[in-house]
Length: 344
Image (tube, rainbow, N blue to C red; front, side):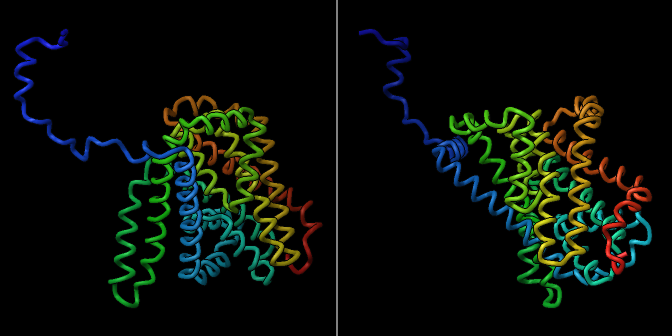
């Protein structure tokens, strides 16, 4: 009978010791054994963890420093550039432009801020919220377990009067821990036939723009949508050229989020949210006609698709903010007609 091995090798193999068991390091990742349905629900669970962590972090920071943030907004809006810088810094700290916008509109309804000062803060908040995308694109998600550990231990065993400060640290780490879980789930999910078929529906910029806007309105946060887009591009789930339009749609959708939240405040807040939504529309026109062609050489210099998404997100909001602040003296002469006398 034919033997595929030489006789000497075959003879020695009969007396060879049994093969050592595989090391645990040799076993494939558990995600490889999951079905597409399991991967889908794991990705949904990770996204829900990310969404709730982001909201809890914003709530914790606002509860701890909400009064300081209000005083900061009141004092730092002496001119339009100071107001925009205040909004940018506040949104970068809270990691949510929606929270800053809600507080700003509330202060305007209470006659603490003028509408002009409040709008400059909201313009800057759109720029400050882009920090999240840069952190994700630069792989800061690996720091999640460190922040979770430090924040959790501090809130349990730290000095009693300082334990509450561990809560935002814990939730900040939970944000990046959830993003790490999303990243590890999207990679195998992107190879499933169902996702490959779904990806074809976002084959045009218009569809991707509408999808980004609708998803932002659904989850009430552009940071969530942009963060997921960065991870989706890195995992091959979305084409980099299409992901840019998802981000543009997310920026457009965040204006509608402010419209929804302003309905609970009053007429002055609603006018502010309309001004903000109009700014996003102007930013869309600016991006479609000029900006997308101007930034192409810079995008070509960035090898990482995630960095390209973060750059487009920042370029969109920064260009719209610069345009609004530069034209503010002339724009406000027209908008002032719609501003109540007591809010000027």
